[in-house]
Image 1 (cartoon, helix red, strand yellow):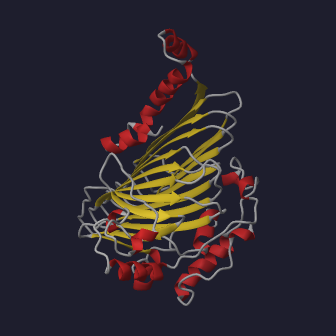
Image 2 (spheres, helix red, strand yellow; image 1 turned 30 degrees about the vertical axis):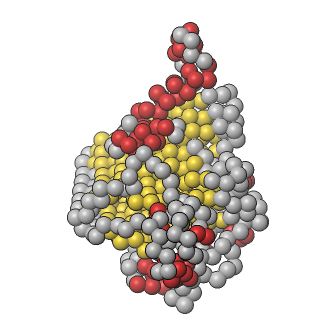
Image 3 (cartoon, rainbow, N blue to C red; image 1 turned 45 degrees about the horizontal axis):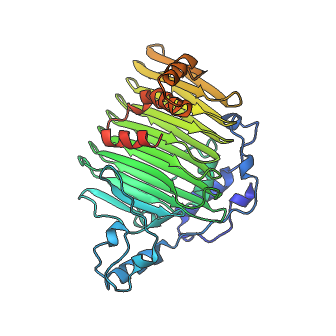
Length: 443
């Protein structure tokens, strides 16, 4: 739909290489149809509208305004996004309260209605966060942005690229181990049909170790209709470790489409967990290239849905070198007339011997009208490999339900206990106990 390609002025139109990247995005963007193989199970009828609103960023003005007004304030709450109590006119008095209480410590970084809010806590030496456009101007991101994602295969990444402006560049120096996670909190509160294209780039130096959390947090009317279109790029140097958590809890009429792309080098490890339980249409897509020996990835996900929602989990892990390892576990719970989609692919090139790749999807159906579409794939051109894939779906065990009800537990409570127990297998793969408990409390 050409309506999604807004004709608006974007920062950096005078930077040739940036405009070249945007041009490739515009040329590659084609709305998927029922005949598009990668999208045949996920219908995009919710995007058939022409009234999406896209607000361009003014990040330089925001940064200058923040710095200027903070100098006159000195309020201790500035970096917590809390309400000022100093009685002085200051910039944060005009901002919504964004800081949220969590059962664990984290460096909170906030977006509000798709725009970065330039107030965040001081980060340790060796960890640098800047806006994506600042990284463009300073040349920090030129070796990564637009280099590796196949825009022909990822149409909404192409749309994101065409409208490239909002997002962050995060760089972790070699040997840095961050004790607290970086937490990106995306607040949305809008009556408009807001379209947000956010593009983040993470670069982990040799031996670096960090955790990143994404939390999509709707704070407006639950009937708000908006579209968050997200691209995250992760670049892992040798021996680096990135653990990526995501909790997608959008409004029930929202659209959420995300691509997470990771390039993993020798002895590096990219590990992710995603919980999806919001949005009318939610698709979390992961593309991983295991580039060198002993590169590893683990992709875990859980989804919970009711009503008429469609939740899609799509993965594509490419073993491009010998002795690489990947593992995937996805579990879903689907009720009402909702639809769950899982498409998982493992590909192993000819020379990638001594490789190991595993994939498993399981789903629990709570109603006769719920639907699951599953397409697991193995594409193997090497002969010395250990690979497996499987898919299964079923219903709640009525004997277990009867047993619990006979012990005085109400039907709905008993069902929730069984659902929690069903999802524990994948949630327990989260290493951090506090984050694991937080995810479990939101199931």
